[in-house]
Image (cartoon, rainbow, N blue to C red; front, top):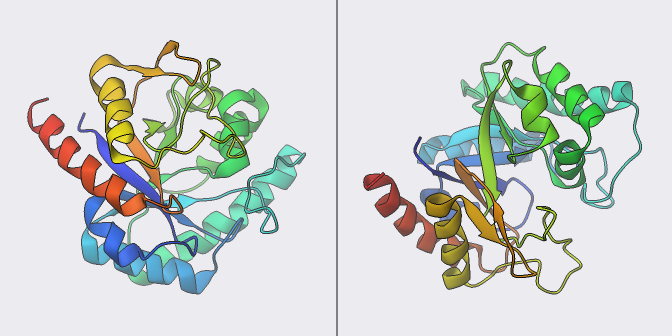
Amino acid sequence: MKIELNCDMGEGYADERVLMPYFDACNIACGGHYGDEQTITDTITLALEHGLKIGAHPSYPDRRHFGRVPMDLSCQELSQALARQLDLFCTVCEKLKAVPNHVKLHGALYHAAWHDEAVAHCVVELLLQYPYDWELYAPSPSALAEQAHGTLTVREEAFADRRYDRRGKLLPRSHPHAIITQPDEAEAQCRSIVFDQKVTTIEGEELPLRAQTLCIHSDNPNALALAQRLRRCLDQWNAHA
């Protein structure tokens, strides 16, 4: 499978018109941590102009902390919060005659579904209620990928601009070395993931890690340079796959 490059967008950070040409897919904030009907419309419109695959990027309903703080919600509460976001996203897609391609969870919810079977199950059950054959972007291995097995198409995701620890988790953003901003370092990490199916952790250990899509965050201070470098790399790597 071709390795793709995706980016979290519609979050009010970067000049996405500049970023769009370097990506295959975008994950669009849909009101949980950021965004409203107008920002979703603007981002989808721009993505269509550049031929990107369009995905929803729902989160805990937490604008105050940008969806990056865990929330103790029941499955019913979580489902309702996610449904509000997905319904809004899908409504805009219908207006623009855009087909939703995928769903990727955001922030603390992404991490919760990574490791918590109950959260993962709740998310998958909700996604199955929608009439779309959409992919689920998820880390592998993860509770989310396991829960989706056999019911949703999972596209395994890894991060080009975040460092991992020995448990296979992303370093918290509060860690001084959590974010990769240098293109050389991002390329080296992605090369290892793509060709060797492993990543070197912050402790210097090697862990197995597979990916079919690689993520760069639009709030990375060097997002454009990272995207330009990795676009060139992936075009070369995919051509020889």
